[in-house]
Amino acid sequence: MFKKLLPKEEKYFEDFKEMITHIGEMAKYTNEIFSQEEIDRSLLLKIKPLEVRCDEITSRVVKRLNKTYVTPFDREDIFTLIKKLDDISDILLGITARLDTYNITKKLKFTDRLAAIVFEQISELGIAIQDLKVKSINECKAVKDLEMEADRIYQQAIKDLFDTEKDAITLIKRKEILELLEETSDKCQVVANVVLSIFIKNA
Image (tube, rainbow, N blue to C red; front, side, top):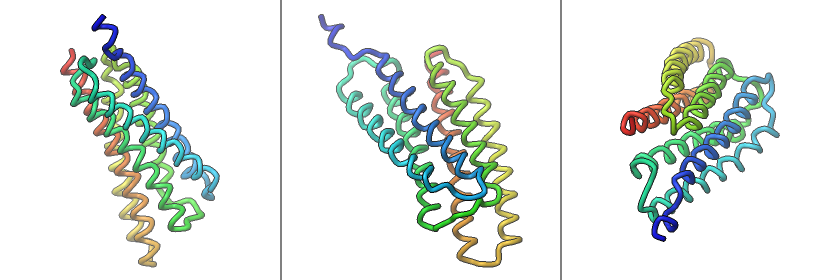
């Protein structure tokens, strides 16, 4: 009887999968936004509802953790993973919010390459999280390799920005967006580290 009252382990895995699916959609829209010559305002509007959904999942997981006696792996790792995933959704929303706030209408140099890397990283995380039970680590390494590439592009972008942009306010705006994209790549690497840690602990 007591076993029937315990939450099913699958609920946490389902939450992680749902979370990374929403984040993947956010990354897809972000990638589309930065890959076009003109900023598509309609795509900006699609990101906020997905971030709200991520917040709801995070809240649901935290509440369940407070009531669960048996978890599929350490509750601290569950909490860390869902919070770090939520960090990615927050920063993706922050990037698009800056585009709106700063009234940026044209494509910014190097942002397409960084956004494409973030989209690829999140795709790799999606595979890793889908396969959380079977401990696939190749995707975690791929996320790290992509993060290193993002760092290289970011350094190139900042150098180019300071070499070519003479208007101080425009420079600040563009620099912040580049920084947020690079930070998103870093956040993806943090999630990959958490997933890898879970794999190692439960090997």
